Length: 190
Image 1: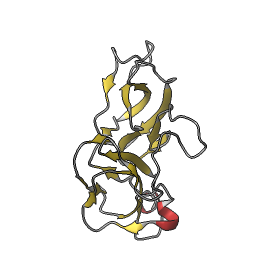
Image 2: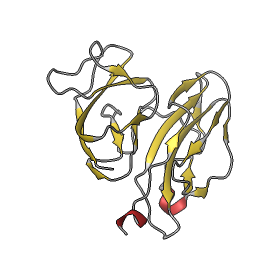
Image 3: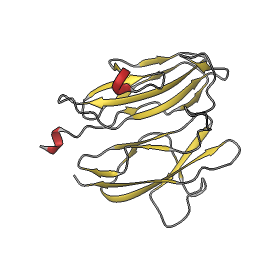
């Protein structure tokens, strides 16, 4: 019965980042749930468009994609997001301005990891929101401090392992600076 209310997290098949040519974004739901998305950073639960086909990300624009799944009972899952810059001189697709900071005006330096810490009975695909100009590194080991040298470069969704685990994530910028470590705890019991 609880399974009827558990909803998967959508997966962005294109790794967030900077691209020099037009890209196509595919969003998937492993459970086949309805996906709602926005391209302007607004809430997909409130303002989302139902996903029905791959999305063309046009040249010279920045897209702040947010997506969420909704099952047939009307329950929503965890949200996923990613930022895509198509072209070096790209501007925000919806406001006409460049994006260099988050909504509060502060630099985006902390990784966002989805889904949040918790216990899951269905295997989840873990995603990390990587702001433009950054790279994310992750590790399942908590025995040593996470650095780009001992972490794994994030290139797309990570499969949640069975049992209890802690995922550590950092962001690095082009200057070699790293964010503080973000940790999320998962228990996956199929």
